[in-house]
Image (cartoon, rainbow, N blue to C red):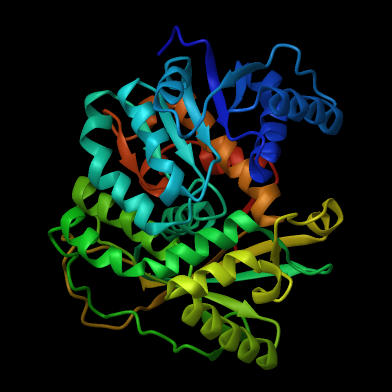
Amino acid sequence: MADRKYELVIFGATGFTGQFVAEEVARIAEEENVTWAVAGRNERKLKAILENVEKNTGKSVQNVGIVIADVEDQYSLNEMAKVSRVVLNCVGPYRFFGEAVVKACVENGASHVDISGEPQFLERMQLDYNIAAQENNVYVVGACGFDSIPADMGTVFLENEFNGQVNSVETYLDIQASKGFHGHYATWQSAIYGFACAKELKPLRKKLFPTRLPELRPRLRFRGTVHDNPIVKSWCLPFPGSDRSVVMRSQRYFLETEKKRPVQMTAYVQCASFLATILTVLSAAVFGILASFGLGRKLLETYPKLFSFGVFDHKGPSKEQMDETSFSLTLAGKGWEDKMSEPTDVYVDDPTKQMVARVSGPEPGYVATPIFMVQSALVVLREAGKLPLGGGVYAPGAAFAKTTLIERLTRRGITFEIL
């Protein structure tokens, strides 16, 4: 791949998230000495995006390339992949538009990172393209955004600091938004079809993982749907995102390649009050009912602002709203001082050691996510010797555990700390 014209190509740069990814690349391009391009189907819009990037960052875009590629034109995707070392794919929902880009990258020798939070897409790409990616020595790393870098790399960080055997990790997401939390329609649409097609996961996982993970003891107990959590001192609900599925893919990889005892993991989200918790449960119930049939999904897609109570729309958050939003993910780990020799060993005693880590940063969807994505792409570009040998399709923790990703993120304003 050394003779490729561009080291990084942002596909979907004219999209809502893609524009912020382009700005993040512009900020680090000179320091990292990378050649890069924006890609999409409309040249006029791509030029307009570059003008905005220059205006918003103060960085010159004179040498930034423009690549014309359409997600519905496989030939154009192939041509894009041929001039790229790493494609940063920002075109979602990925269940509709992602596979064609992965296919083009794998078949034409380009690595691929995305910011998908869709377990069905992520796991199907591993099932269908892992062998081909290994044969072509390229890396496909999904979930390189807010879903699910904090949870997956946070678990890696906690295990590295634990100095013992981690049995379980519980994560607690807290989003602080003084102007109210807002998201873009594409995220809302991904959530609709992720819920609607959740039944696809069980048969998919039987094919992808024919051997079950070992039954670990003692088991991590589920705290309940609504509970007042003593660790973070707030009301909490199960977090419905992709974090757990992504973390467990990494844990399975560590078991298979390093014979490391898997960590059990459960994800929760914090709520501001008991009333907010109940309202969230009720709105989630309405969302779940509507997403389960065609007409309901049509209503959710047509009226996102109504059914999300003002959280999601086609405009996305304003700069002021993003500036006033931040996230923290608390990871509570339990385990023992000493490691046993076999990954399936059963511990007689309950965990005797605890450690709490936290990953925190700016607005998660459109400020932190571009940072996560761009630094992940740079690691793929620069640190092939520290990635799993020979290429393949991976979750972030599996791909980046031995790299400098956490150090890179820290320099870009993402905090990893032990409390």
